[in-house]
Image 1 (cartoon, helix red, strand yellow):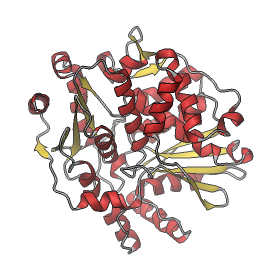
Image 2: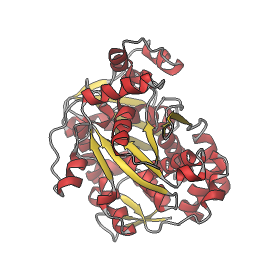
Image 3: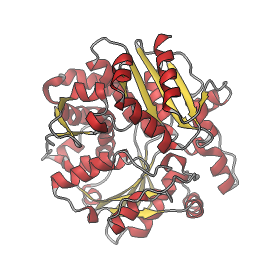
Image 4: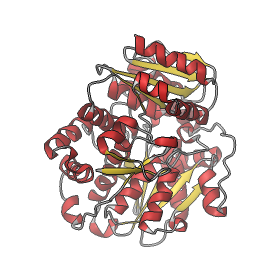
Length: 428
């Protein structure tokens, strides 16, 4: 598999290099030089989740890894389902929260851990990643206890749900968590600064587990195929998918699935009031504003890292950006949709409800709608209980970690202080 740096096209790397490096020169994202197309989609969709995902990922990776190796990686990473649930006659929820940390990031985080293990050259690695809530837990649990890999996770202090925080800030060992005095965009900027520091990068074997790492995106492609496989041929030929979008990795993966041949009619980018992309699609002006805290905190991102990949894919495939649906939803509207879904018999949380609301507004007669539910409602227990007047039971993983002590270190939004932390971690 060959990939190129979107910012500096002359930098070309293998899958192994892209997984180990994370980012290219000048903070450029890696993008596949060629995208294969699966012609017999019906036969592919008839396969089981593991077999199909192995075929998709093995075709993308090429001869760098044997199909047997890829199959073992997929089998280890995807040990949980991605079911669809009917909400109404023509609308379905894709539930991506059945993994160990109850969020869609489990797919990408666990496959990245398997990928890194498969391509590692034996040197020590420091994973540095920023999270707006769910990435941190998925990455922490995927890499927990792995030898020669230290993980440092930055998150905005006081701006993720308490249960999200507990799920990844209570592990210890090779997992180090840092609460930054700022928002997610500040955390993301610190990660980028670290990658720009060549000496630091080389000294500690720096890598990132954000969706900037191509292995995570590749894993996410697979659950779009899995969703379509659970529908009739007629349904999937008129399928509209609404994606709750923050850093835009999830939507990027969906568009890549379409590029590989999955017959999705169109996508909708659903955001909260941090609406840089919907405004850009409306006006053509990229004008990020200060990030605002919302009840859908995993989407509190004003400068989404993966957007350049979407623009590059649209350029390569000659897709007009105007074909992408869009919508921004307030907290009040999100709460209304949580209640509406609950009345229909479906328990949802703010991120999924945002995708549902925009889908409901834009779905046309004869179309089948699918909205992504990216996290278990219990991860946002305080918000959901307040909206519905309920008392959601905590699933096992949350109940276990809720009782554990936080191990995070507080840190000012200062790169020099972060460098000190990173060097200290590698010496442990």
